[in-house]
Amino acid sequence: MKRALLVIDVQNEYFTGKLPISYPQDSFTNILKAMEAANVNNIDIIVIQHTAPQKDSTSFVRGSKGWELHTKIKEKEYSHLIEKNLPGSFTNTDLEKWLRERNIDTITICGYMTQMCCDTTARQGIHQGFSVEFLSDATGTLDIANYAGKIKAEELHKATLITQAMRFSRVLSTDKWINTLKK
Image (tube, rainbow, N blue to C red; front, side, top):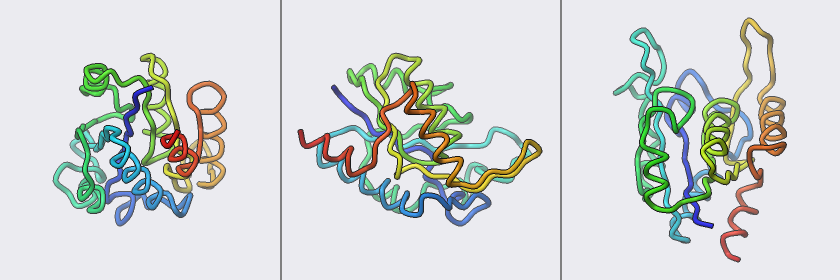
């Protein structure tokens, strides 16, 4: 097994912008912990940054404060930076090529939002033939309300993890993931 850690969309928009992540509370701390463990264990880290392609977008606008990666992410060592425009990190990016060139067969998902870009990327990964690990406490979301209804962050997060575990990913905590690296 050769892993890569995907750090998806850990951008200011989710901290000081229009989409503040609220659940789980320690998700950001666990993202940083996963990055540290990956660096100690010589696991490639791919940082992924979302850019809104719509001209009238009010979030993730290239060059804006909300679009920027969180300072603590920028301070960490990582192997590759990918800019994406859709929820899936494989769509119209060099992610698959980059992973295959390095014989990586397993991707570990952390970042934001659980049910959107993390979930989509995990599903794409399994469809591309990768094994997928999904860090339950290093992904996060917020309460959502739209024309289809309302859902609390905790319920949405849990539903996504349960669905991931049904077929797409091995869902585990950051600590359990780190323990697997020591074996």
